Length: 112
Length: 115
Image 1 (cartoon, rainbow over the protein chains, first blue to last red):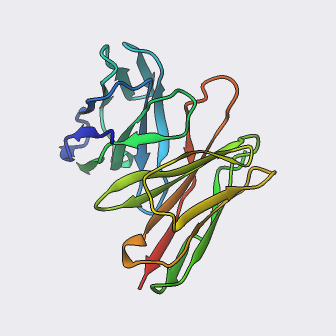
Image 2 (cartoon, rainbow over the protein chains, first blue to last red):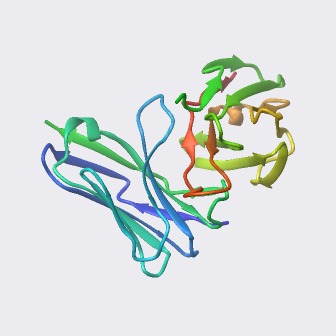
Image 3 (cartoon, each protein chain N blue to C red):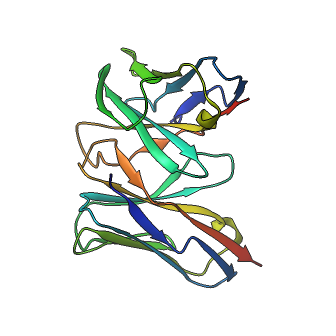
């Protein structure tokens, strides 16, 4: 089946640093979504991308839908302690369908 | 607007038992899907329902089943539980039929422990 390769698996950074993570796939996706999950909670949608090349921001978060439609990245600028958590990318083969393929997650730890 | 509500939040079962999990989608959302999250396999798609019909199904055995009611609420059932079924089961809903319908909103999950 489809797989998403998400990297890095974990990051240890200082507060205030910028963060970058990405996902690649062997399959073409029509939608890319980025989620954040805190311990004991469900994933929370951060950014949704619908067009190849699209660059979208949500506060300090910026994500891009790769031109080839096989990759996406998420950047977090000026990290703060509440950014700690696990970030997941997810690809959607059919826009509007609920079947998502998830990456394995990037665990972000921030040293104050 | 209330989010996706899942019950129960935590439950413990023994091997061979069955379990039913419930999900109430965001008001107005008609599409509901279920995911299993484990440390080893990550988040995996179980099935998707829209208008009481299963539209898509993941690669899980027949012991995993679900249904959707006319008010869009959904339940999933796992029969003959195995140790490997221990996981966080997440329900997600989305607005289908207009706008950016690719956005799935997740509940907090039901954590199942099988002993």
